Length: 108
Image 1 (tube, helix red, strand yellow):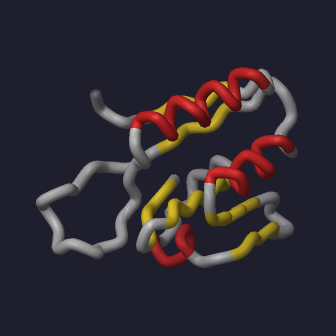
Image 2 (cartoon, rainbow, N blue to C red; image 1 turned 90 degrees about the horizontal axis):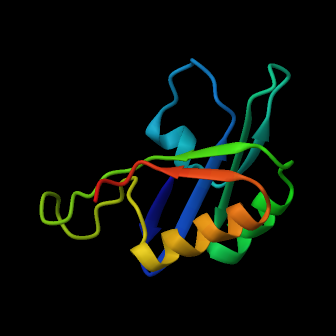
């Protein structure tokens, strides 16, 4: 997941679980690892998310969700969305070079 705060992009990676997660839980700064093997890593900036991706083993998959609410919510509202396509393409290529598959749910 990703969201913009001011001019900065933030990213959260979590392990896949069937448990519902709250908006606040996913956006909370920092990382979390539970004894139930739930991992949440939240970072700021593209270079930081690349460092997290570097720690992942090959053949992993990342599912990137969000929505575009431009013009539908007041300016400055924080919500899960996607950065510009150029940044998405950069991260897709970065993952590909590390044998990690990144699936973006962004609609064309």
